[in-house]
Image (cartoon, rainbow, N blue to C red; front, side, top):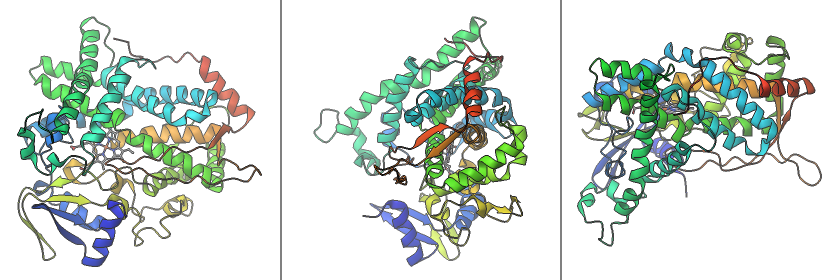
Length: 469
Ligand code: HEM
């Protein structure tokens, strides 16, 4: 059976750029091209920026989450708070936190390369915990266990097709003891973790601020606004939406996994990126954001990671708020509108040989070619719902991937004869798609690189570090 993104792509190829489906009376529109998604979701954003009501979101206590909240005043309030801390300028203030945690990641990778995905999970959670709440995460923190339960809730509650109540929301009124009401019992089991995940780090951060231990963080800033009269619940929702947006859904982790698999399978690409880093950065330090503009190949490689395997293959569906018309197609009010990010990322009009991992496609005369469609304009969605964490994610990816390339060599595992066995990268199905577990060899690139990482272990990093609640 075909995966939904492939199935949708074939439907668009057969029936046209806009396909209308009827899902038990719910109109559903599949947009077949990036251009159609821009035209409707972006240029006509006021008509296409809501979300469909989610009965499971409501029952699990996730209805405060920004990605679930329908278009309107509450969503705007949360989004404004998120934007103020995650816009392109604001995210530059988080560089030292990103760099500190990436250094810790490199040390863990040196000690225990097999567990690279687990180290990535910890890295992304630690960075966002510090940025949002000003808290320093420890490996055995309760926040991690609560977060793990909340992520299960999120992933299962929103898994398309898993719960019939999502199609027939009226079912949410049947009693819990009723034989078909397993969804209610599941939701009740997750609710506690979801609410703790929203409340506990907030309370930890507020306590630290009140006791004079508060450090610069999103919550410190939000508390100033609350003290000036802003609604505390909206502020709390904004903080938890960013925390969940990064740590629990691990979108950036998915791109990191893609990077490790691509480097194992394309050694020539890896060598070319490393040669560029050697020339620009030299062997005795890690790359920084100041180097970025001198590293076009590394930047092209990161773009290719975002394009090659889609993190959110069919986006997060938008809901239309009024009837519309596009190139002769009628789009009814209350339609679910799907952007097929996976298909746009391999549209041969923009990317030749799309299944190949080839950063060169973004370069011309050794510089980034602005005429090639940037996959960042696809991967992060469209219109007013576009990912508010995109600038933050791109900076985390640059810090992490350039530092790993600079210090480690990644290669495919070998068979008993010593021949490399390419990584077979299979992506999971779901709202967010990850690589199924795979092995690759990760070792320091050189004795100098290993020594550099060892100095990081002992380094006393002087920053405005956070506090443990
Ligand atoms: C490679 C990393 C990431 C990718 C590919 C990604 C992709 C996306 C996509 C496709 C959407 C849906 C957009 C739409 O509705 O059209 C989205 C929404 C969202 N993302 Fe990201 N994201 C990433 C990282 C992050 C990070 C690091 C954060 C937080 C710091 C974040 C926070 C959010 C939030 C809060 C929303 C919901 C926005 C709303 O509904 O108003 N994302 N993301």
